[in-house]
Image 1: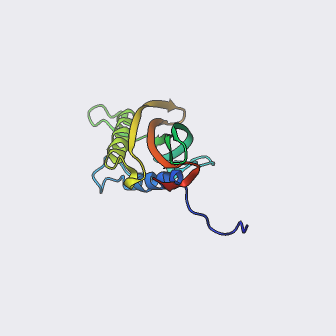
Image 2: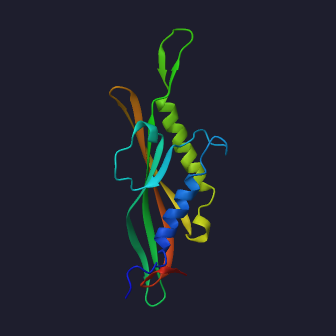
Image 3: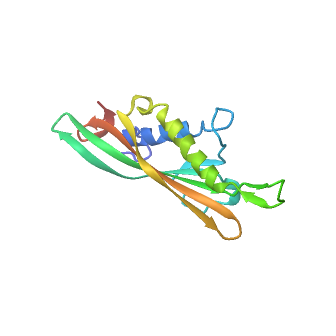
Length: 168
């Protein structure tokens, strides 16, 4: 067997790539509240301030939710979309003090991701459904204020039994 021969992509891989491409459409130009500097999967190096705001997609687990011998297997793919944002500082003209808009930005990023993924819950026909599972926000203040969000989604899809490359 030649290992340098390109292989077909699994349905799971196609779903991840579809969602990444979909998330790349989030921009102010396309009617969303924010623009992103980085959208990728499983970034293994530290994010620099220039990389922010960023979305990292992590498909860390999936469950078999149905097995139909010799026909198909049903899966629930668990996704975590981690959003990292930098502070957005403005000046209060009345008081002359800095105003950190990060909490509002976090909420806007959540709304943008929901709106984006909700625009095609079948991932271009690869899945039956995308189901939101919730989110959580964190604000951190060291030298500046920044935040992160984890948004959780489940993708429901099926493949031919024992063949994760073939959709049924």
